[in-house]
Length: 423
Image 1 (cartoon, rainbow, N blue to C red):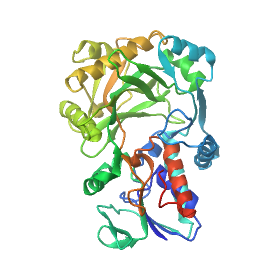
Image 2: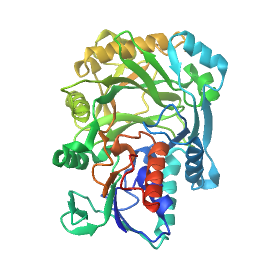
Image 3: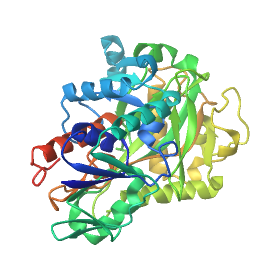
Image 4: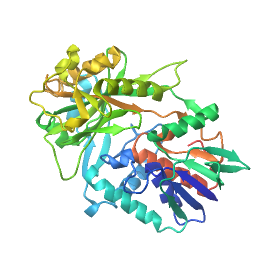
């Protein structure tokens, strides 16, 4: 078959790894001008890989396959040098968090580091480039995908036997267009995570970082919202993430360059009910409102005490931001976020302080907005010649799960099971 793969990210990498050197002719279309400028958020920023059955997606991925794919990425690093850790392998820490109402999440972590990721991505691309059946097309944005004569036509010109869409969350415009043309693609679209990036001095979480590198916990706040930590970065850096029409905050860590702060996300999970059907639109609206207050391309920075008291921050004290100065403005997150979200985050931080003293210090830093979009859960049976893999499918939300989703889809295609696969 002649197959179009839309986007070159984690999911596409999994698909290509399974289908390289086969009889299928594969064309990869990436909107970035070249491999050096491609923006694959999960792989470009931080490169945290994990093996877990408790997070990463809504499909079952065999831990054996997860470890195989972790090794795949690590093999493309320089000297196979990564940072590792295990979340809550210690029963002592597990009990400490559990007794205070938290739900600890167990996982194995492998941190590549942002500074190694460009090399890793290029090495993977170069490896696939040697396969005679894989062809890359950069600066190739796909604006239309249509069924025609039992196959797929992209951009009203190129015919393929099937297309696999792997555009990640950043490809939401294309996904929304396809959904608009075929609403039956959507199975579920009610979730979005809204919150902050929190930054504290290393010494406050030093023991926890040494024990497990990344701690992941959930907490049922008094508002009823489930609140969770995400993407902990010991000695890391806060960065902004540009979605084109709005800017959010994120964090990463490097292997060689270290800061004196640790940052992590605190996110409240919203599961809304009918007639709500646009979680990306809702999250985008909150982000744009925050950007309106902060200025174009900037996020809001506030001290924790002012965040609690709904006061605008005008000066910082002991904790200095790792985010570049031209990327933020001192302000008040309360002007942009719904109060119930603010109260949920405060409840989470205050309770976390009972386990980790100093987490609720007045001068710790709050950045906003941090938003994690759950793409619409798409139906992969609707059109047997059009498949969705990775985060854009709504089935995954991590590098390894997205890569595994692509890998399993490749396996289904090779075994001629793609027509009825519900992956």
